[in-house]
Image (cartoon, rainbow, N blue to C red; front, side):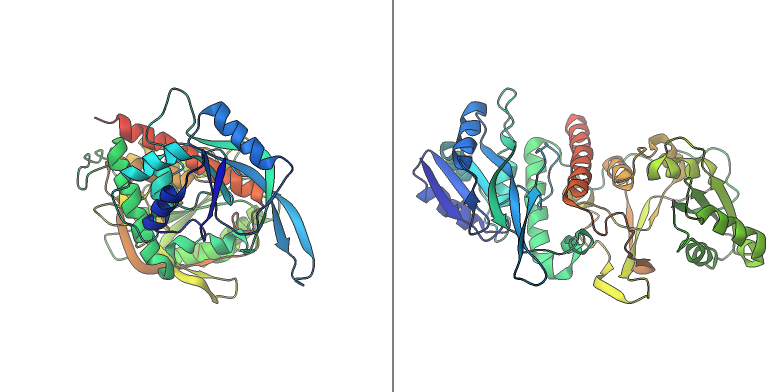
Length: 431
């Protein structure tokens, strides 16, 4: 009833997928991305049952991970839930777990449509195609929220170490193919945006007293806020350009607000010739980082288009962390706004044309607010890039994505997939 095939991970060739389709003769085809899968009692039967009940093309499930401890003698078993698939789940690194169960007839039909030979994006091409033709209300890729098997986890890096894999120069060839693949998918479903077809930026209203504002939202950053303020105010500008620095504290409890006040009251260099410091303490209502950006935007006076810069990863001691420079060279003028739906971020630092930003606003959320705004702007307006390193990004143990557990990672990924789903729908609905 099941033919089982093994692939060495999600990066594989189109030829490997075609060979699986050719050799599959059973009613169901199981593709395993890792060796040594062990099953919960009746786990395979349950996957078949759900596939038959739903009429899905492919099903995947929650599972357990077997992880070697540091001494490599003890092995711990941890729950590894995954998230539901959405139409905007276009990330090529979407985590299905190690087991994908396909309806063989549907698998063969999809493979017959694969008209491009990819060295790395074969499986990615297959699963994107499997979502393009919706049958009634059937989720063609269906998540089973039950723990059905055990897999051995070999990548034990922290979430913050995995975060930048897609911008690592060593992975460039893979990323180029993934971009080609998702772009073809967007064209097939009517969501592709042609290059250079942009709307005109809104006309600014009242004149602005400064050219730009540097905005620093913070919560419980007593350890780093002074360095951030001094760094921002130390920047040099030439006439007729001018800037200010706006710090928004969201009800810190670790002495951050007191540190800001101390600096403002006791450091005469903070309001020198280069820039003015403005401090905004938030009220006690819910803001999250998105709400803090909105408050700063209403109080700021910049005038520039959206531009995204480049930074270098360091630790708190200033030592460079891999992969080093984060320049997002996957962005191109021709295809950046299409590829933006595949990747998990657009880069930093970000500068915005405020008359436009005030028509969009940030979602009031702790995570993904910048990605949401970047996607929305990219749909209708050009985004500029600066590939010179503009600042050092110091990664430390309290970074929001430095060491997320699987629940937090799933929550973050699900939300960004939701943002992509909404944006995808908007692009498909555009005339």
